[in-house]
Image (tube, rainbow, N blue to C red):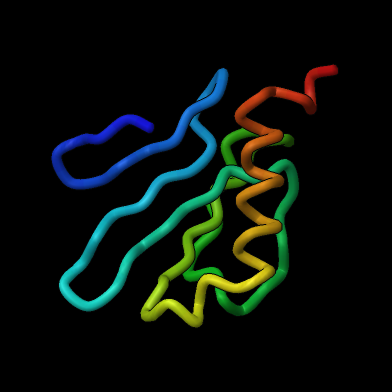
Length: 85
């Protein structure tokens, strides 16, 4: 975990996730190996074929569901650079 002035990022070999607190919610992002078509994502940015940043707004604790856990696990594997193997 790397705390910064306005956010926190999580890194294994490379950064794989982060969160920025807002007044009424939390903006999270995950670096995933492929684009995921899910209406919960506010925005998706592509940096290379194996690096797609997905932005998600968390409004309350109920938003931290099984999907978010799975995306975080996938992002951690990106952070470990498993896609290079």
